[in-house]
Image (cartoon, rainbow, N blue to C red; front, side, top):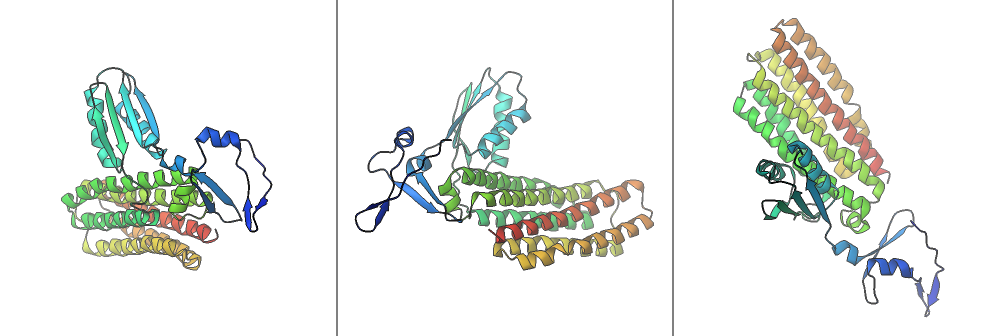
Length: 335
């Protein structure tokens, strides 16, 4: 990109002004009377952005060949959504009713705000109606974390009580955590590109977007591990005895508290508490080792022992992702 240098001039007695590059103004359609936003940034920076860019709707076309696989098409659609496009036109080279049905089902499960505007045999016209101001960044992260924490709680309950119906409900709930992950990622991608959205989301600078991306991904992975615990409860052959159940519940509570505390310190940007939280990981690892030893000594059948070992690993990974959130909090507190 070309760099422009302008000398600041005094207009009248107190007004400082600079001229805008003529080529740049013409390229984006800036005219006399057009509005521009001036956004102060940290480090003495000032961003100038024209309103005309912020109001424009971004459109994308997705061409689907005859041999396109359903999961490939969905991945491409999600990528376009994450890139911040508002309108997506899907064009099919041949009629493919199955692919259209697959997109409809998964679009509603995974992509917040995506709706079908028009549909024909060879085309689908989609539009994203979800706006970043309707669900601000921190509120979206908080909601995503609450969903993931409830998944962990109910997954543990399903494992200890052998509640298959609850386990299946937890697995389905993972789609809601994923949906918020994609929505937050879309917000962050737009914020990194458009200064006005960065300002509206109350993010100090584009560098912070990467930290928030790591945080929302950590929450999404916590939801995945909670779903894994629920899946284990569907496959275990026998009910867990009361003594072992008490120990598992103890580990679960410790890990869940770590996760919720990591979100609390994130919202407060409290690096002191974040450092204290990080030290809790060693306690979780110790509980993990002690519990694993007890499970092995019980000499259950090999299948159940293996499943419980996997479940213990899931709780430990949740604690590790909570530490990731705390570490990003320390970075964000310095910006």
